[in-house]
Length: 120
Image (cartoon, rainbow, N blue to C red; front, side):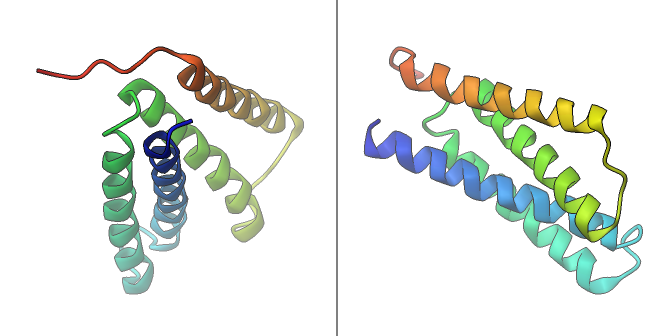
C-alpha cells in the first residue's frame, strides 16, 4: 500500500468517526432544540464531509462512501445502544457483522484492484 493510499484510508477513518459523532449529536439535539449538541452536530457533519473529500481524492467514491456510511452506521448503533440505551438484538448483531464484512471486502478489493484512472 502506497503512503497516499494509506493516508486516504486514515482520512476515511477520521471521516467515519465524525459521522458517528454527527449522528449521536443529532439525536441528542432533540430536533436541534438543544444548543450544545446542535453545534456539535453541525461541526461533525462538516468535519466528516471534509475528511471524506480528502479520502476521495485517492479512493473510488463507491468504496469510500460505502465504507464511510458502513462504519458510521455500525458505530452509531453500537454507541447509541450504550449511550441512549437503544435496543440491541441478535438480528441487529448479524446485520452489523455483515456490514463489517462488506467494509472489509471493499478494503481488500480496493487494495488488490488495479490503478485508479485519472480524470481528464
